[in-house]
Length: 206
Image (cartoon, rainbow, N blue to C red; front, side, top):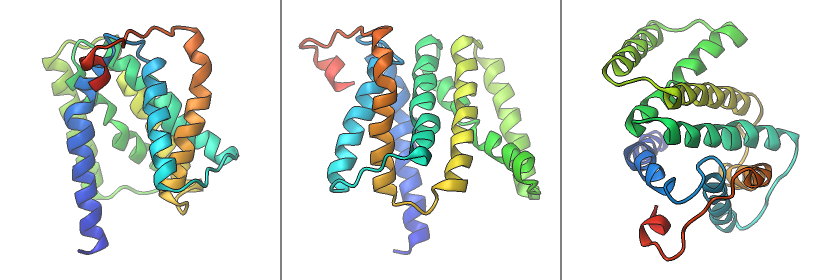
């Protein structure tokens, strides 16, 4: 199996696991814990530990890794959790967060002067049309606006990664990002440390 095919299969796996279930499951989890804070800590804490074990250590903490963790980790996930919390439709949030590729392309034009291809222009146009249709069909609320802001933050993080970290080891980078994001997000627990896991199987499962 060539690397390009493996890449496409990995993308499909991410779409199925994250886009297909993560948003609705996160909505359930928020009934038992504060969304932007406790849930963020769980996501990065357990994720960082798992990746640390897979990568057999090798955490890196420097300026580039911290900025990457702030943009692609803490800020993005906090906005994502807030969007799911305050939106009446988690499925719409999953669509609006994926305005990220639109912002990535626009920032490429603004920041680097890159000329978009015809297919990219068509893609942006179709994305905006789809966005308008989605917003028109469903009621647009503050959670949905936060989702779009999260997509923009994610796009900024993507460009930062592209310029500074694209050649880094992915396991080490993501393990470090998760650990750093946990440290950045930790003080927010003071704001709202609400958690009601107890022996509730649904809460722990979510």
